[in-house]
Image (cartoon, rainbow, N blue to C red; front, side, top):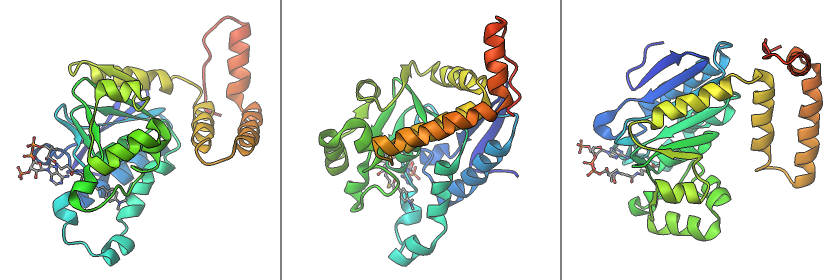
Length: 258
Ligand code: DAK
C-alpha cells in the first residue's frame, strides 16, 4: 500500500518505523492520516520479520492533536457512525510492542496516541498536553483514563481541565515517558530501544505486553491468574526450550518465534 500522510520503513534489525508526515499541519491526525496509520500498523504487526514498531513525527511535532479543521463541522451522528473510532482503536489491538518517539508538540489526540503506545521516548523539546477543553470538547481516546492511571488524579485533572502542559522533564518525573534525550538523538535512541525489544523471544514479548496491559483492567487477583496462564503457555514454545538451553550452554539464544 502506498501512503501520503505517513512514511513506513523497515529498519534493521526487526524494527518497523512509522513517521507521521503532515509537517505543515504539525502532524494533525486527520481522518486520512488515521486511515493510513491503521493498515500500516496491522501490516507491521503481521510481519514476522518485525519485532517492535516505532511511531514518530517530526522534531517540531509528534502530533498537535486530531485535525481540528476536519472535526469542526462533525455532528454527534458523524462521530458515532464514522469508522474513525475503529481506526484509533487499531493501536490497542497491536500485539507487538510499540514505542512512541516524541519530539515537540504532543497534544490532544497526539498525546493519546503516544500514551496508547507501550513506551515513550521523548526529546528534550517534547511538550505533552490535553488542550481539548479549550475547544469546547474533552479527550476522547484515553486522555482521561491512561493519563490519570499514569500521573494520578490531581495532575490529570489540572491537565484536562486547564490545559496545563508538561515538559519532557516533568513527563519523565511523572512516569509518562521512559527516557528523555536531546533532539538530535531521541529517534536514534528510540530505535535502539526498539531493537533491544525486537531481539527478545517474540511470543514471550507479545504475551508479556498483553499481561502488563491487562493490569489496567483486572483486579490484582484476576491479573495474577491471567499472568499465570500466559506464563504456563510459554512452556509450550520452542523459544522457552531454546532460551533455557542457551543459558545452560552459555550461548546466545536463537529465537524462532515458535
Ligand atoms: N488540527 C488541525 N491543524 C492544526 C492542528 C490541529 N490539531 N494543530 C496545528 N495545526 C495547523 C495550524 O492550523 C497551522 O496551519 P496553517 O494555519 O499554517 O494552515 C499549522 O498547523 C501550524 O500551526 P500554528 O501556526 O498554530 O503553529 P504555532 O507554533 O503557532 O502553534 C500549537 C502550535 C500546537 C500550539 C497550535 O497549532 C495549537 O494550539 N494547535 C492545536 C492543539 C490542540 O488543540 N490539539 C487538540 C485537538 S482536539 C477521537 C480521538 C481523539 C480526538 C478526537 C477524536 N476519536 C477516537 C474519534 C482528539 C481530539 C483532539 O486532539
